[in-house]
Length: 539
Image (cartoon, rainbow, N blue to C red):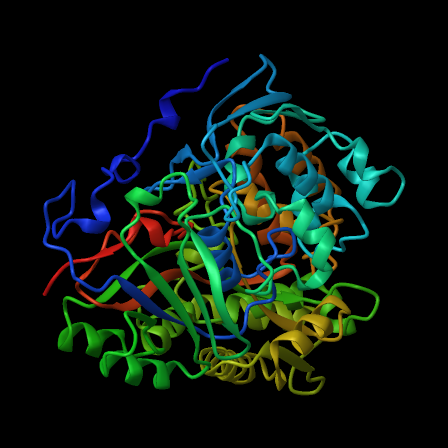
C-alpha cells in the first residue's frame, strides 16, 4: 500500500543550491540577513544527545538538528521525508518498508544505510544500552521488543531488518496504522556504529561525534552552552540557511529575558505572568500558540502511599478544588488552557468526554469536594498532611504554593512543599518517595495514545503506580483499530473516575522571538522544529 500523499516534500526542502550565496530567500524573495546565527535559551543541561538515550525536550531539539530519522515533520506536523523518501505497508499494517535516499551521508562522508537504522533500533532496545526511553520501543510494537527489553531474548531478534543498503523492513506484533508517525521521535534516529564502538559513552563529545543531520556538534560546555554548525555532508545542505545554532543554559527565566532584550538571544520563554505586559510592549515579538503538552500532578497510589490518597473520594476532592482559571489567568497569563483531561484537545482526532467538573462553578466544585472529604472521614478533627514534590523552577514553585493554599483553604489539607533539582527529583519520583508530585508531558507523536499510554499499569513513567484492567485493555485495543478515538475518550472517563492524576493545564508555546526570525512552526503542536527550516530576514 503506497502512501505518497503525506510524503510530498515541503517547499523548504526544494530550495535551490544558491541559498548560501543569495541575498534573497529563494522562495519568498525576502531579503536575508548577512548573519544567520540562531541563539536561544534552554533552562537546564540536557540529559543526552545520544539518540537512543535522549529523553528531554531541549536535548531532543539538538538531536533533531544533528541527526535525521526516517521521517521528519513539516510546519503543521505532517509527515515529510527524512532519510527515507517514502514507505509502504502490507494490507494489515504489520509490515512497513522504508526506502532510503541514496545521497544521505554521515558527517565523515560515509553513506547512511538501512543497516545503520537496524543497528540503532536494536541498540535502543538492548538492556545493555539501558535507554531511559526504551518504553517507547514497546509502544512502537516491534516484533519481540518486550521480550528483548526484559532480557529474555537477544536484541538481534528485534523485528527490523536491512534488506539492502537502502531498504529497511519493520515488522510489528499487531496492526498499527500510526506507526510512521513514531519514526519522527529522536530515539529512532540512527547512530554510527563504528563511532559508538570506538568511543563508548564519549562518542557524542564534539571531538568524537559523527552525525547525519543538517548540523554537526562543534562545541559543548556543560551547564553553559551547546553549539552546532552546518554539516557540509548533509544531503540537503544547499537548502539550509541558518549557519550556526547556539543553545545557552540559563536557568533563571527573568535573567534570560534580560539577555533577550539586550539582544543576546533570538528566542526565550516568557517568564510566568509577564506575557500580557510584554505583548503590549513588544507586540511583534511576544507569541503564544497551543502545544500538545500537559502539566499535572500525579498521586502516589502504591503500597508506600499516604493512606488517605488510596481513597478515591480524597483524590477527587483534591482534583475538584484546584482553581485552574487562577493558575492560567493569574499566574501563567500566557494563553495556557485549563485542563480537566490528561490529553490536550489540540491532539489530532481526540474527542474529550463530557466532564461534569469542567461545567461546575468553582464554588460548586468546592462544595462537592468538602462533601467527599467528609464522607471519607477527613476534616478539621482529622486533617490530612501531604508532601508535594516539584523540581526547581520559579513557575513550579508559584503553582505549588497556589495549589497548596487552595487545598488548605477549601479542605484543611496541609501541604509540605519539597523542591528538588532535576536528577534528584526524577529519582525520588521513580522510587515513589512522595505523596503528590509534579509532572509535565509532551506527546512524542500526535495521537492521544502518546499521553494515555502513560496510564498503562506497566509504563515506566506511570509514577502514580496506577493500575486499571479496563484502561490496559482499551490501550491494547486502540493499537489495532483504524479509529481508536472511542477508546481514548473512554480512558479519559475512567481516569476522571479513578483520579490517579490531577490535570492542571495544557501548555502554550509562550516565547519572546526576534521578529526577523522567520518560519517558526507555530502550527506544529508537537513543536518538532528544525533549525534548517528557519532563517533571518534583514532588518
